[in-house]
Image (tube, rainbow, N blue to C red; front, side, top):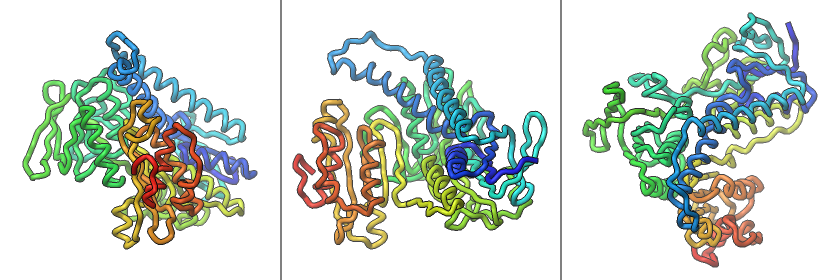
Length: 466
């Protein structure tokens, strides 16, 4: 039996970051992973491969539909899906290999196999060569999440699939139906839409990207529809049957009328659930909350002393960067340092084109909470850099407290929104104001000037519009 200061079960963004930070703080660390590769869902079948495919499909769309506007004449391009998928896998392999080097550098001991709790400080690892036992002064559960499967429409791995299979299609679907208009559904729908598929998105709620500001959501929806994506809102899927090598999907529309749609593949992207099966939680007596997540206190501790949990298995948004920050905060607290995480400044992103990025509260949430706000808007149509790029859809929308001017929220739809959002997140983390951004000189011409102009617009002082 091997003994460590920390035993981590799960090598995704939460687990591997915890292992690295713990090692930096002088702890001996064991990292248990059953996948066969480090990085969890994010690096292997989630964030990283999806962004690789999004970039490839974006390049194809630019060459096919926008190059001529720049005076670049290209023969009609064709898509070689196997080559595109192979590039995606190379990106994944390189990132995962880099993570392995980080583990060696930080002297983290890797155990390949399924980890489960035998007691508060004892972990069993079942691997290819049998079982072994680890003990830890602390045990961290960071096993991530799984795609939600609809009980009346189970995954078959080919026709009705999760995001994992949708990253590896062997060809462009003729017609892809996506169930769910959250980040995963919109992103993977965009990939195959750009490559030539007909894409229909079916969403039960009245808006796509329902977590986002209503105005931002509607702008993104309008843009995706213009690109050719069919979006059906207020619809409830009820089942699917295989027929003629494809799928017939049944749903009721927003008026309650039954409808059917034929396609060759269905991507179910209705959310994710905590991956807690066979962890030994019941045996040790660890409590779950009403949604099946591991219950924790504000210090990430479970009800069993010495056992902690972070990431997708606990409350909060299921985001890789949230898990990473929780990992660092927890390890620093265990080392006696003031580990910190601010849940109000965690950004979220939909990597479509245009991108949608948000941080903080929406205008609707401010009204619900009785907060009087001032709102500044600036459209990329008035931004010189966006015009030069030919990517001038969308806007920056800032929400500031009307009394104090403190920045409470930011919502961006447009080019590189995933990068632009962090100026707002930093301002919010420092309890800054819209005026702080407005008074900061921004280089010209840049997309970030749209953020400054939106900050000026909070006080009706935008120079180029607003």
